[in-house]
Image (tube, one colour):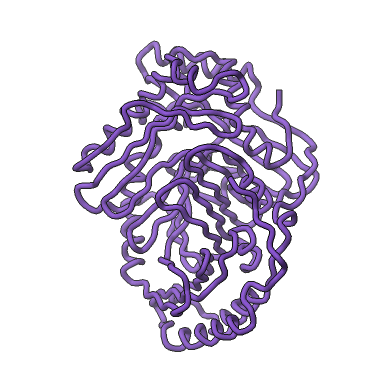
Length: 468
């Protein structure tokens, strides 16, 4: 992926553009903002990088998102929430109904010079239903937010839920502050690397015992595959800057699609660079992929050996067939690649099979998320048995790790990635996660080594070395 571009120090909007945007916002707030009715006011914005634009937005909670190599490529930065739709015990059907009601009610007012922009919700869901305790408390079971401020290259949008008590002058002043903020040098966007003080995580012996327990379950016929994850916690001398980690992840290389994200909730942030698409929807077109079977790129295991590995091909086939079975009933057409390709990332290569379809009818994005998640690439097979095992035996709660993260917009388009190659940042502590698919032929030590390789993506962004 490309480095963060160096930009000359200049304001987000020049004086004339700022004055024009301010007048348009003032007029729109008088004429368009009505109590009880949500509205999005879309203004012109420069063609800045996500990293640079995010520094111009108000500080605090927000999202950074950058998707590459995919049909719905998107760069966006947000600040604050106009409205939060939280996942709860009513399930994703109820959440999807609330999303649909919002889009039906939302009015959009556009400045004629604003770039293309469709309002969207951004957020994610926990790997398993229910809120994870402890470190993940701020993120809960999941949510989709209508951001207060949203930047995409060429457009800046302010959203109001219609329940605000603040006077219009508040939003005008915030716009003036955004317009006046200046870019930062590229080096400043990536911040400084914190000093690591300590590392802790699951010991190899405990990992081996869990793998053997899974293999015993496979022999009994309880399941065919379990994806076992481990957590490594890094303590640093000072708080870790999530925006800097997000920026440094932009330097990570690799083939194929990638989804770089940072979801910030107070002093907590979930940040990562996922190589795995869960689902992408554009009208009746739907896309997903099976990602399973891995090899360390530096271990002499290039594309040929990975494609020839019987263990990895068998593990991969489980994922392909599970996704095919879940999507086929919804599709008039479903095209599954004849065989896997190899996706080479910076430290690891994966077997990947592209899956494309045409839906029989329009489907709510969360309906497809619920149908697909978790695939056997992050959960296991059969799904219910794998989830029961992980809930009872996996030593660290996953929270949003390996859950769906992404966005859905008012036109019905959506893009959700699988939240892997990721970390939960809590002040001076980083909780890093990595998993490995365990099948009958798995070697416990080799699988542990695979998780160490997968941890490298976030360790590199923190400037650290993996634990032995």
